[in-house]
Image 1 (cartoon, protein in one colour):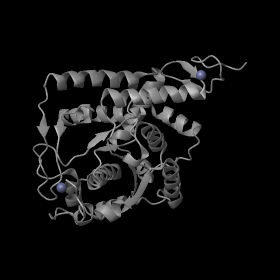
Image 2: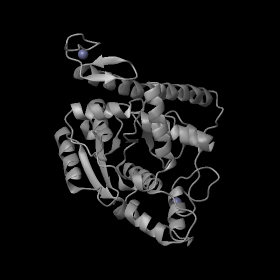
Image 3: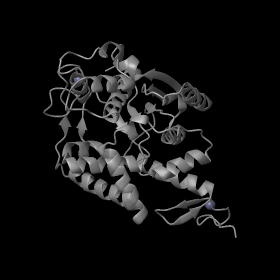
Image 4: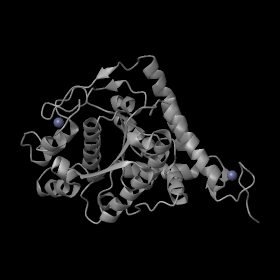
Length: 335
Ligand SMILES: [Zn+2]
Ligand SMILES: [Zn+2]
C-alpha cells in the first residue's frame, strides 16, 4: 500500500526523515528544509536585504542546495559564486566546474573560477608533495591545508569584490564535528568563533555564514537529488589516505545518530543555547583579532603568525618569509 505524506496527507511519501520520524512527500520535505534554513538565516541575521554574498561552490550537494536557497533570499545580482580548484589528483574535473557555471548562468548569478595554485602558489597536491619530502615529525593533513587555504581565498575575494558575507555549505554534521573537535581540544575561542553571533571580529574578516548548519547531510543529499542536481560524489583521495580526527569523530557521530536519531540536532541546539548565553552575558569579551606578522591577515589572539603562514613555513622546513601568494590575493583590496 502507498504511504501518504505525514504533513499534507495527499501526496506519496518518498522521504523518511529519521530525526522527526515523519514520512514526507518531495514538496513537504523541500518546504521543511527551506523553512529550517530560513529560520537560521533570520534568527542570526545571516543575510539581510541589500547584503552582497559570496558563495563557495564546490560542486558538492551542499553547495547546490545553498545556492538555491540563497538565491531565494537575495537578488541574483547581489550574489557571486566562487569555484576554487583545490588541485587534487583524480578529484578536480573540468566538467564539474562547467556544470556549476551552467547552474549559475540559469539563476543569473555571476560565477568566478580560480585555484589554490593561482591564488596561494600551492595546490593541495603541491602541499602534500612538499610535506612528504621533508623530514619532519609534524605533518598537517591535506584537509587542514585545504580548509585554511579555501577560507583565505573566499575571504580575499569577498573583500576584493566588496561583498559583506561569505556563505559556505557546511551542514549540521560538519558543524557538530567542528564543535566536538574544539571541545576535545579545549579551544573556547574557536567555539565562540563558530557561533553565528560570535563577537570575535576583524575589519579584514568578512562575516562567514553557514545557512545549512541545522540540516543533516543526508537531507542535503536527498534534496539535491530531488532538485535534479548532478553533484560530485567522488570522495577526496586524501580522506582515505590519512584519516584525520574529524573523520574519526564523524564515524562516531554517525553511529550515535543511528542509535538515537536526532542526537546531533539536539547537540547543536544545546551548544547554541550555551554559547548565546555566554555571548549575551559577556562571559567572552568582544575581541578584535590581531594581524599576522608576515602577511597582515587576521590571526588568533596571542599568535604572531596566521595558520596559513605557519603551515607554509613548516612546509618549507622552517625558512621564514612571506608567502608569495600575497601579490595575487591582494591585487585589488577594497578594505
Ligand atoms: Zn506532503
Ligand atoms: Zn600570515
